[in-house]
Length: 269
Image 1 (cartoon, rainbow, N blue to C red):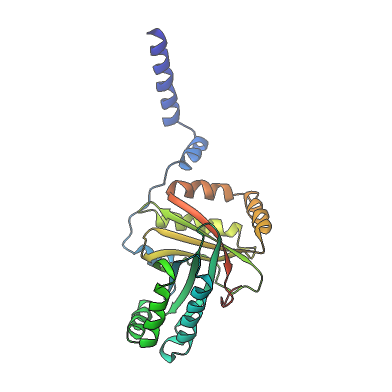
Image 2 (spheres, rainbow, N blue to C red):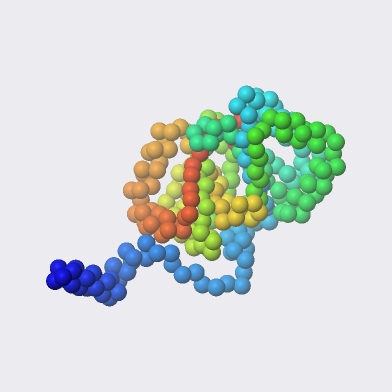
């Protein structure tokens, strides 16, 4: 009984020590708990993105025996869009990849709509009324197991998207955040990107608008896996990077990464 009393007394003393911790200890605790976000009358998208450009991320899981035919189909879709005067100036393929490490038999295609959702509405109307496009879509349906589409906005603090020359690999790191934490994520990554933007690896950073919500995608570009390893180790040696990671980890519900290789028709290689 006496031992039990002493045990609970030690627990109480430890709790008192935490509640009256020094500023240094408070800084350590702030890395564990999500910091409070102030209310705002502006939408998160307006606070995090400053461009009237919407991106569409297509994720296709193709049949294992149909990769070549599937990629030919996507190339035909791209060629059709490029021949449409009403679409070619506002709808552009940014990147096209197949997954090498991660979800196998998967392809990702990133499209840019200059003019926002108004252009997406026009695109949907034109493609819905095109017999040729609908035939391409029907053929594609026979080659895939599942498809998913997300509309995304680019984080304003990420470097501008620039097409890369061959030969590179790409890593897409996808995060499912806790609802209500997008501003906190953006505030921390606006600082974190400074530790890595001097290198060539930041390609694009997005957050979802339609589709799976509170999703973030960071796309990085590397020469190869060894260069990826060296670059990430270098970031950890940069003062302040560890704090940015510590602040953002509590915001995440789920995360995963995939290593991708560009298709032959991808604008960025």
